[in-house]
Image: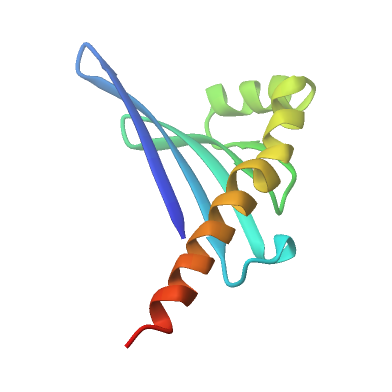
Length: 103
């Protein structure tokens, strides 16, 4: 699993995103890309490649999901599974296979 977090703070409130690639092989069909947005530890919106769109979990998230699913954001996020995850998963799997062959 690849896992990245971006954190921003302002006046004691925290906004952060979590980008995650879950995989059990280096095949594109076996990879799930998720991008989650949090505010003060509460996830308010998520894109999942298995769902193919943004889903909101709060009033603010639901409004943004509607807007982002009808705009360029959802198109860009759909491409991230291949652009971001597939490339990096291939690199990690290859590195792990190389290490597992060493004695």
